Image (cartoon, rainbow, N blue to C red; front, side, top):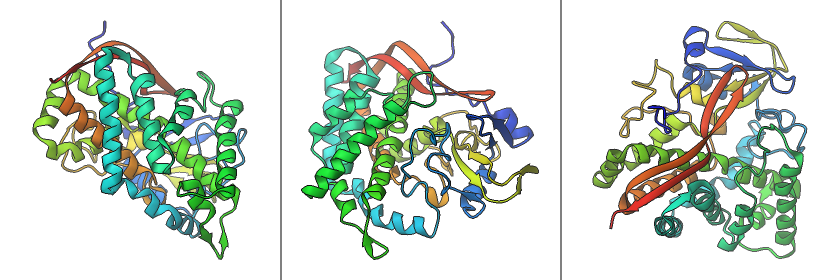
Length: 389
């Protein structure tokens, strides 16, 4: 057995970040220039005129999804000023996780999941606890019955990807077909769920089209699935290997907000996101041609040693933490409030109910990004949770 902790996520970009500031990878014969430094990532994210999101649907995602979808994800694949108008339609809806009633329901869901895990003894936490937590929490975000989560849980953790394959159109269509049916139901019989709210929204003097509503829904499902699962699973592995940190959260509940931000920085659940270059330009003294792609490597920017002290360590109460784990500027993650609440309540509940966590078995989830290999979480994590009581 190696002495290396399974919760340690080393940064494969360090040398490139210090020496050049950019790396390169090929993605389905559509090359990508990878921006590594926090300053460059932030500046580029802000410059939507030169580095656009409103390219061909699927192209800013890496690996590219142009071959498996033509639905534009909204507001993710739109630039200002239209982006601002789309975002304004849904901003208040996605802030609902801060409401007391929402928080109370989410707390009940997470407490129940942890109680069941404690009763089981050993369990594979991703399929038996984390995926159900993520799926049931999503019913709150969509304002749909909790029973709907059973369908999403049945899809499994890698619903939109086949293991070892970048793209899988059949798997992607599971989601698209599901959303089509739900939107048709909402059109026939409107309720108070997100599908109905979108279809009833006014945009530029008209109602949103079904395709536009579908774009918002695809983003809501796909954007908040693996990222939330990775954040929760990595946090669990960390507390298994750092019981003193779990005890500290219990004794100092006031630091839980800082701990959430630190986990997002350190684990960076989404490695990077692309943009398409609209004109010949230069980044890090490197020429980049029009109609090629760059990627904003959030995971590298979040380990930038010129910004973060001890960047490769988890500092639970890190004072200065300008991370970009939820993106930056116009395209900052719409689901960030929901994700933060899940993580915050999960950590608080874990500290209250669990005394220690034993690691039984695990299988790492490694991304291959050209010459870079990055661990983003686990394909499998078997643990035993021991009760406080």
